[in-house]
Length: 92
Image 1: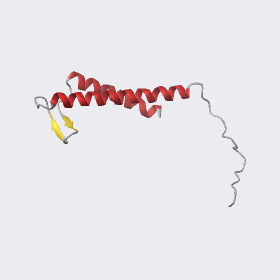
Image 2: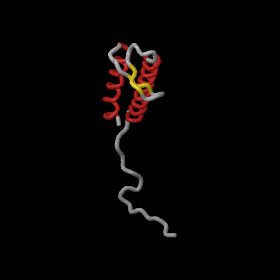
Image 3: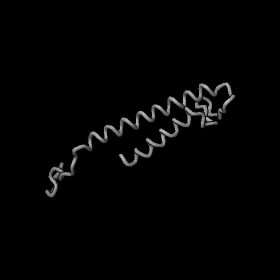
Image 4: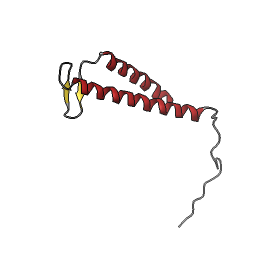
């Protein structure tokens, strides 16, 4: 999971930087599914929504990575309970 999330974290950081620096010139208004470009009266609101969404995604990925790192610290593989024994299920 960590190896899957780390590239996503980098992509989310790049996207947020691009949004904040003006590197994005077309966004999609989620309210009515249309393209919005600079100069459009909806641009500022749509850009603010996109930035909030990107920040939220970045925060979520960061949180999940921290949880994974905490769970993995000191972890080592061990045998499963009952490994090697045959499992018996009751017959009803």
